[in-house]
Image (cartoon, rainbow, N blue to C red; front, side, top):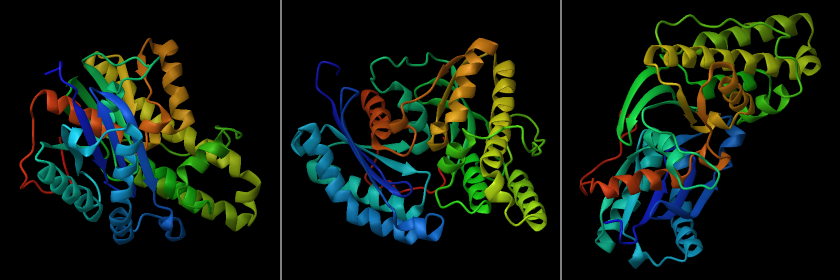
Length: 340
């Protein structure tokens, strides 16, 4: 099968980014993302508006991906799409389009778990980027997920730790909102944190058993802290914004790294890969780089364009499923909650 040219058209529509990519034998020929700015005025993603925007964007995005890859749709070997997890209305747009196009072209359909794809993004062919060797630990961190996954093969993955309430991306965004920063606030916390003192203010770390996480109590502690300090000084946030952001980020990174250290100790696996939107955070990336010297880990950090939702990661997952001839039935449906 490797003698033939396998061209995968991949579609991603799990949240508020409409994305399409073309991969040929695992190499990216195009990776197009249309972001939706309509949500900024609401301080978060509005599911109904997201699905409408996907309907508007999906045809031009796929057309652009094929044109940039210089591939005719008749040369596509299979269509990979995000089945879940994600917003149901958004997933339905991508799922329906992928099924219709695959049926029309009479080619295989490949369903992909969005969170598995974040992990498999590490296997995209990229110069100067090492690929993890099995087994390795993956930490997937995003607005909707915080997981530690033991990866023993491309599709043999076991979640050994996860959040019991809110995800780390939500902790960043909600903290930013409390500080009056616009949505999405996570990148702004990261930006201001770089110039602040990470030990200026102390926030509590939640005590959670095993390898699981919790961020709801952390968000509450940030809220009470800001309310208390602004009551004494209405200009407190303005005067201390960089230090507050640095202290928030320092605490969140500490929570993540404590659990990763525990996971490495328990499994004996010291290869660690990260994925998901929050893995774009500069503090987290630096903490992982530091861990290589501190504890002898081997860490894998994806390129920025593969951290946020994108179709290239769906394509690489689809490519490896194609090699196994793991194709989906056309009666398949989207799943907003989709465990692997």
